[in-house]
Amino acid sequence: MRGINLLKILSITLILAIGLCFTVEALTLKEAISLAKKVYPPLKEKRHLYEQNRFLYKASFDPYFPTLSSDLSYQRTFESSVNSIGRLWDNQCTLGLTLNYRLFDGGYRYSIKEQTLHTFDQAQTDIKIIENDLNYMVKEAFYTALVKEKILQIRKEAEEIAKKNYELALAKRKAGLAMLSDVTQAQVRYTNARMETITAKKALEKAIAELNSLIGWSLDKKTKLEGKLKASWINANLSVLEELASQRRPEIERQALETKKAKEAIREYKSNYYPKLDTQLSYYRYDNDPKFNEKEAVVSVTLSYDIFDGFGRYHKVTAQRQALQAAKAQLAEIKRQIRLEVYQAYKDLELAFSNYQIASELVKEAQVNYDQAYGEYKVGKGDIISLIQSELNLVQSKVDWAQQLLNYNIAISALERAIFTNLTE
Image 1: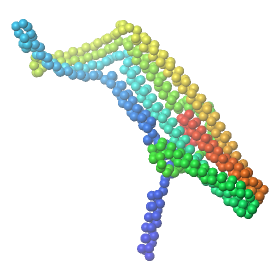
Image 2: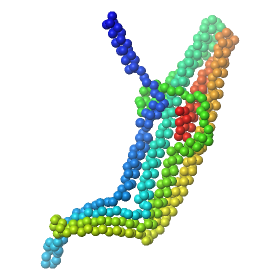
Image 3: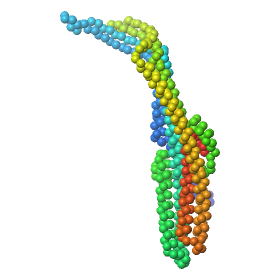
Image 4: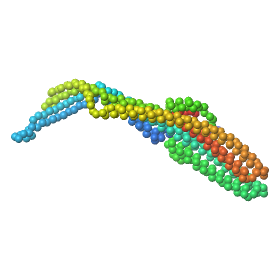
């Protein structure tokens, strides 16, 4: 008895293990976005550029450190004359160490460092911009695949309804209650419904392939999706959305950094109007042989200033001031475009939700119309044309409903991209 129970336990365990091996884990939207961020090539590119600019920013601190250099030389001098050619005259061996440090440069080092810092910060905003666009693309592909699943289900149901209509017409024909044309028309509709089911299946496969492409999976992988499409109105105030966009959009942040870079570039060119103050400490050992018995130490402080070098300094500063004004104008333009983008996305959201509500009502009306037409044809009060047309209207209303549901969710995603904020969490 104990052996039989043990055998049952082992059998159940084996069945569960096999079932787990063949279970396909559903993919959620959050997981899809996370996978896409790991494999999306443009995002990888921006991350590498971010690391590049990080090291360049570290390198911008080098001018603040002193430089230490060394030199070793050996010199042989020959004397030549009419009576003596190539006679050795002198040897000189020199070993030196030099320490240089710039005490003042008019702000040149600081401006270069700050420009490099702003470029580094811009590289980070570039990552945010790509991630924002990628989030939208993944959401659009994910929602499209979900809706294509719904449409495939609708087409399968339509095929069953068309088959039911065909069988009804065939039964009435056998009973002598319908003409042959009723049967053929119902059969044509049934064949078209089967073709539409195949088309919907291929459309779903293409939608899944697009999503798989974004997340780095094989295009033909059978991906099961887990998620719901939002069908209720989201509470969103347009003025609040515009304020969120102005505060959070990385494009605005990036252009603001460009403006700061232009200001620092003015400081860079203005530094040419100031003198340069350098200090140098040199230590030399030299002799006629490599013993270096003689030594010398020199400390120097140098103040240098270009009294006149043309009008390049003035023109460069003036040109950079114009670049600053151009950067400010571009910042204003980006803000204008983003405000318009938010406004249009909000209006698209309103339109999509209104269309979705109308589509939902239309499905109910089409269902009532089909039920009535089917009942009338069944008892001999209606004709096959009315039945087929009502069935076509019902199917099309369901497909339109699914499409409007997709449009509404895509509109939400577009608004989220416009304000750089997730509204559905």
